[in-house]
Length: 291
Image (tube, rainbow, N blue to C red; front, top):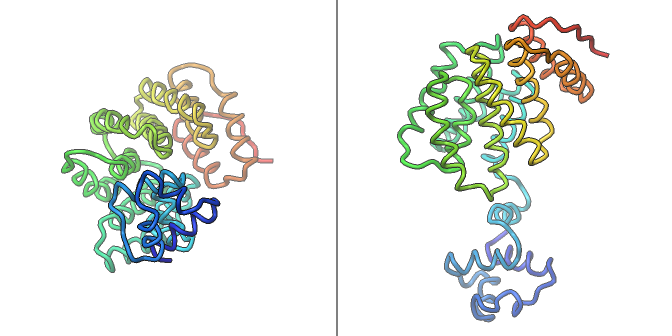
């Protein structure tokens, strides 16, 4: 669908006349020319039209692309989903797909997605940070260090590689990331990225047996998950918190039992197995039987 056709479709779907849409933004005959693909408005007028239509730029692109999600967005979501479910086979397939796309397009985004997928595969095999994992994320770390300012893409990248950094590196990066992220607080994606950063920081601190910081970051992650009703993220962060509490000498076994029952009930089998491995790794003896 062409640019003007998309504007017209949205306008008619919302029962707006050309006069109603164009008033105060551009002349009605100019809008008519826009809808006939004979005239392209300036950026400020274009975004004013989107604002009047109550449509985001991302939604506009989605409609213009015949309601198909752009592949970069789709593969990013698939990687996140596979990582959450600890689906190694899916991550391996996504690494290949991202590699092929990078070779075809030379787009650095696909290169980063390939590296993240490979790093996640390496981690999920034995749930430890390995030299191979560090090798995979090093180019991303260098990319981030070379940026004067981070935008949402760079902030997401940081969140995705936290698990392969040292605690000192992660804390150094996170101060910069969270300060920058505050600029995007009114974006929907802000809430997920902020929560993921704190969750992944808690997971990293568990990995390095820094249980005090793991507890602190997990609590922050839970607070954000509660604020934005991020149920899945909350369960995972509560597991991190419970593990940290136990290693700090507190009784949090009931929390683990309840959360594992929830994970089992929701049939997140790979996630269930992941946490069983993690519990065993930390010598946490919990009598858990799947129904």
